[in-house]
Length: 559
Ligand code: C2E
Ligand code: MG
Ligand code: MG
Picture 1 (tube, rainbow, N blue to C red):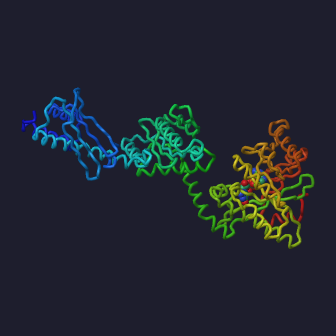
Picture 2 (picture 1 turned 60 degrees about the horizontal axis):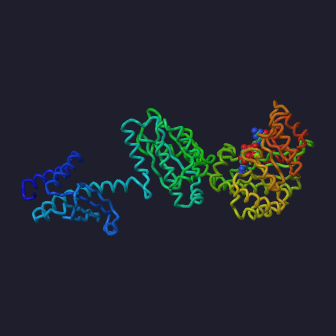
């Protein structure tokens, strides 16, 4: 058996060649060699074990590979153990049939060398795998950003990027999912969601996790429809039996890689998906936005507004414009709405270009307080001059609802200018969630108790529910112009009928009714015939600079 030196040397040479093969590892030849060696020494079973460290070895927590396994009762004939430089442990165990004589010293020496070679080779392969795992997966075992980057670089090399969809997605409200199903189930939801979209990405595509509830993916064009369906909301299982599920949706930014796209750096693609994703996140919940070059300039505008805001506030670049509210019977100015305009370097920036951006953080709150303060200052001045004043409404963003000191803050400003409380009205828009609804109710009650008038703005767009007017005792209902029939409309059109009924509902409930966006004489007449007497709109005036408005107010009416 093992007493032929020549045979051992041949094995040794071949083994060195196999395990140090520079042109790559040939698995078949290696296995054949291991089998020959086993035959030669009469080994029936060869086992290798791999442990990340000594501690894991003690607990028996490692990986076991059985390289040779033949029938026959086995006894352990030899065991060798190596601790690598990185403190990993590799073990080799050789078994022989019960009735075989023990290995001779010479056989032991030979096998020690051969097995040592095998083990150091295996641990090297294993180490590469461990390093690979470490570099390309995150702590929870998901492929990470580097893995994604490696995939797109590979795809780029084979020129197969065009038409693919690069996607940056953000699970919607995942903290709520965790709250609802518990953290552990939440992890399962996340994993199953990942597996769902990974399946859609298929062999050609790729999905990795950026961290938290954010994923990055590359999808083939034919997967688009299915992907969009899943992102808009899909049931995800989170129990072993598959009987418990929860709907998961995501907002996403998608970049469809065009033909001829020049790929210079892995960040090129990432950046585009992130820009689109940021826009998606800012828009309604769960939105999906496809990248185009316009978005980039939009993103730059967001950054510009946010960086300029504080300076503009200090420099008083924001001006209050007043839009009169007019009694349609008497044509008298009965009130006004304060609307913000931003004057920057000789240019006027309309509110829709900066208010939604300021609403992305709490900046809007400072602007609203600034507006209120300027309105109070104007009223104070007019009163001191002995001129006529009317009630002015100020818009308050919904962002204020979380401010527990809101009431004090508002009252402090009004009282500092010693303005009678009933000269101020606060406009709030309707809200969609229960939590906000509670806060909204509280804010309305608090301010009403101070004698401030409370108005619900833009009634009729979004998710107006009758609950909003049943549960909250508004003083004023501002009907959005989408409820206002246009001139060509018949009196029995849906809009006309709804308009009539909303107005009479408000009247029956004793809520003052203001119609926004009144542009034509016919619309004014329609208001009159429906006994709704307050109009605000271009028909009478656009929002006016303070001086212009005050001149009109001195005249008092539009006759
Ligand atoms: P809003 O509070 O519903 O204000 C009414 C908007 O309708 C104003 O737009 C006004 O100019 C416009 N409007 C009035 N009459 C007509 C009409 O006859 N036809 C048409 N087509 N439009 C009319 P504006 O001034 O551009 O403001 C847009 C929105 O920006 C406001 O809607 C409000 O939500 C917000 N906003 C303006 N100023 C402030 C502010 O100081 N704070 C907050 N939080 N939001 C503000
Ligand atoms: Mg308003
Ligand atoms: Mg409005």
